Length: 339
Image 1: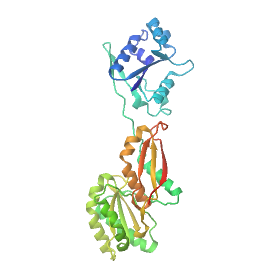
Image 2: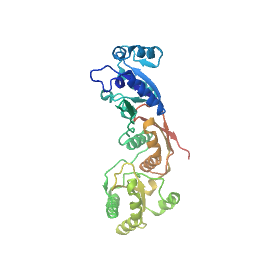
Image 3: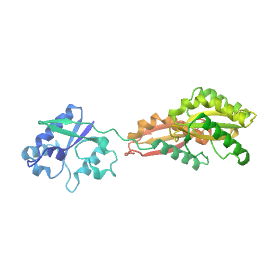
């Protein structure tokens, strides 16, 4: 991997009244090579006039071993731009704070260093920060794309405190109210990893005939197992209390919008459920967030399917793009699904 050496910053390290040190630069070069980097030495235009060994420094410039920032160009901006274009690290103790708005991945590129007793110690760069709530942002935009194509989605996110009793009470209240006002909602979040998922899907046709209502209990992935243990009791309690001809089907689903320790409840008429998603989802994303989003692609698929009201998940494909340079950048396109 390439590593740009901020030569002026390195040369000035430890300087009090003395001149910038060419030796500092050469030690940094050797240290990076020893770590497997391919160093690129970049110096600002003033360094050649200040460096202690001017003649040797100028020879390195003439040989192209050290590059000088073009006149009229800010060295910091030049270095950051090159690092972005070359996907390189930067050896520098300059934090480049004034450039945070323009270059959002500075901390994940910058490698700090120190000199002690004439020896350089090279540090490590910070791990790239994940953009807060990027999974939710992706799901929101995906559902917005479906809305443009005429498919409504459930959007409420109340996050009530999770317990079996609380879920049963909420379901009873909502179903009782629906008999007077009707239900104006779609399913909330399905999760493909649920136990016996295929059997649940195979039950759909029977459920549509035998159950007037489908109760989807939406929880954080952390609370899934706990919620599943209460599902059977919730179905019996709701059916008995409302004197329904058939106990409702209760399905627990992981939901990317639900906070740990809380739940959402989406109750729909069984005949509102779509057998499968009408479109699959293609996500193009920056390199920084690719691995994280790819890892959660099944959660994205489940959230989209549930909020649209489909039993089968859309296929969610995630691919990186070099054209998306900054963390948080992504693009969503829908592709007609196969029936």
